[in-house]
Length: 141
Image 1 (tube, rainbow, N blue to C red):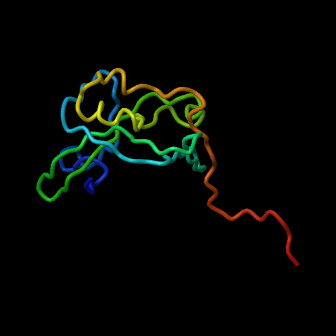
Image 2: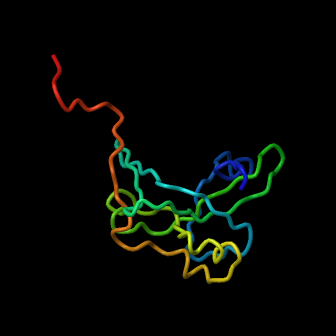
């Protein structure tokens, strides 16, 4: 496990650091990595939400790492798929989920990408709003 910067080197893309890669029509035969996660965040207008596994388990997001270039350190980008039924109400895509039992299949190329980089099934995630202001639930005197 190493620490890496999230996003591509902006020097090679007009000053923009890209954090995501769409999986459609692409092959990832090298530099595969995993990003451990217990949730991911969604921004929808002014509201923020968190999506986490309904069963409470952690998961991995499929990623691709890039070697250091010049002053830019080792970095990674997260691969994205179409959002599952719970998430699509808030945004169209999210990170490709790699289950714990699929870790080595992703890393050692033993299973086709098309079988691993898929939209997760319904009822996998629970979505909760992240409240930025405290909510007063009772009155105190």
